[in-house]
Length: 261
Image (tube, rainbow, N blue to C red):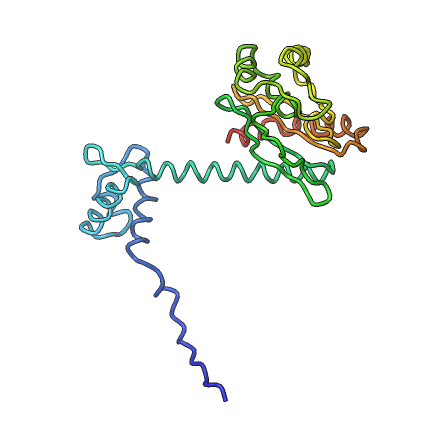
């Protein structure tokens, strides 16, 4: 016969809460409500804390960077600002993830979001499904901008000097039999690219895959939304790209805010 297990008595929820943390958070919220700062006595009064307790917590929060003190007034510190900024950034990223998933399902293709930042291509988000998988990054996207629609679209938005700088660092190289052959040929192609027109490539990066990318301007940042399809569905590429472009245009205002990650 197995020994019986005794169940520990349930603890009241309040027993797991730490009072000093609660009081510190109340102080932070109170300081956040005073754009021009507030003195300790006012903060203690508004939070219902004893003045010695408020002083102790305020000094601790200042020491940790969550508050700063200037001429007897308390303001939010850099650490608190970073927390707020991080939360806003996560919210923007969540918006992008949801938007891309919606387009993925509506158009029935993988959808990509990428930017050109500090001289490098960054794929920020990819939304695909097992039935419509994204292109496998078998050759570094940053080093092969000449070969894929994302890279060509981003390079087409740069000025000539920035394009040449990129190609000096990442010169054209053969990825597949369909890849553009040299820097000069690529630069001529980019010069002929019409503003805001979809950029397409067919098996230049990956055999069996065709891609299209839509240029997006976010302030001074070059950005793009792109799609890919297996080459046997190549006849769908332009209609799918136009559908994506229409969706982007419909959400242009809110999207521009969200993608400034």
